[in-house]
Image (cartoon, rainbow, N blue to C red; front, side, top):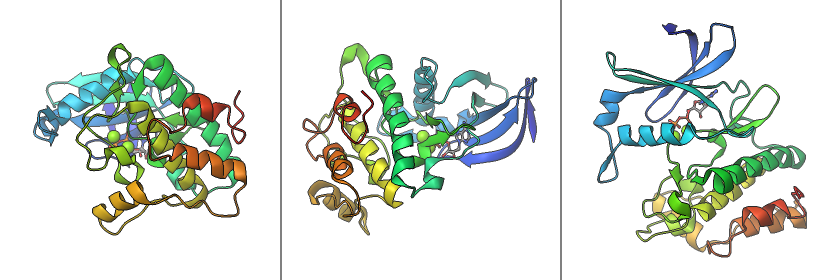
Length: 268
Ligand code: ADP
Ligand code: MG
Ligand code: MG
């Protein structure tokens, strides 16, 4: 339990790589989440050759400050305390937990969440010009009305001047597109998110990722060379959509537009 300005935190609701997340109430009694980073620790953690974790957190905040969409977790306020060396992100609270916790689920339910994921991602890619780069069920939160909220922009990047190209890969192994594995070239951002959305949809339905390996190198091999096997019980539309999102070739992979008009989704 702790007090921070108008916020009273009561319990921890999540633990990430660098920060802890607490549930808190503001002075009117509304619930919020507080994600806490320790600046001193972040300064000493290196991610990549030239970047510290502190730099990454600054990017996470700078990006989130620009975002506003019903399917993107809202950042309300950032509080920095240089005496105790902490950064506090005051976020919309998501009482429904993560999509990970309710997978596997029925196809109808998966479609309900998938549509919201696509609308949130469309906003990020086309309006905000941000690629998320760590889409996975643990980073998709649910509010009290079962609305999906894309969260955790710790790996996100802006597509400055519309340039959709990156040279440093990020993300979670089982959700990373084949072009990221062992790659040291440059790759496009949007298709990387689409791949992760494909793996996420598979996970929602099956409770496991489509590609697996005992060692990291076995996972790479599967992601790069194995065709995804969608269980027979699913209808042809759903199978077709998963195959299109998990196309090994990023240039051939489904676009948001194609996903929205796909017969399984029918968002347009
Ligand atoms: P990390 O970058 O370390 O993965 P996240 O932002 O993903 O940190 O937060 C870690 C976990 O904390 C999430 O997977 C989720 O379980 C929980 N969490 C994060 N934000 C919220 C929130 N706004 N409401 C409820 N739980 C949250
Ligand atoms: Mg996370
Ligand atoms: Mg993160």
